[in-house]
Image 1 (tube, rainbow, N blue to C red):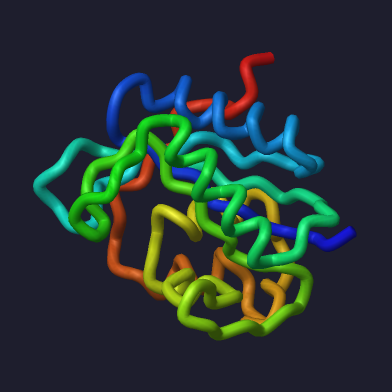
Image 2 (tube, rainbow, N blue to C red):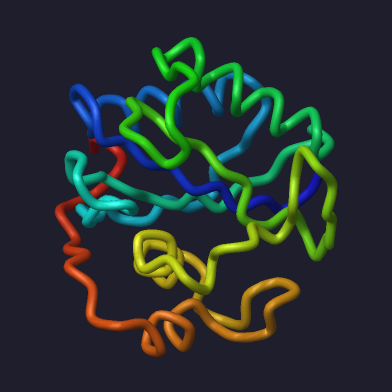
Length: 162
């Protein structure tokens, strides 16, 4: 089993329900969720679209990286994501942030995710669930977040519905 960190985002429809549905789908398809961050509401990147809800999962899976990417893309399509402008509005966005200590750079997939250190909407929830140095990057999410300009990210509550 590999330790995998997955980022989730949604800015169309019932955003919280979309995040929860994506987690349920991942659990049904071989991803064992160990920890969930809180849900954070964040400004869209790029601006000019609805605000996002974001979260991060720490999980384990026996699914290889490229197969996991295919699974994430299938879940996105099943939940209504269509091809459109890059970084445009979407009901769900699922990204592999880390896969063990793997470094991978192919046309289809780069691990660790190449823009982690630039994105408060990833770092804020990530800092809740991974407190030590991040795999490969060697710095904590909190340290990386502190280097970014002020963000309007705000914690809105738990991801799970307990």
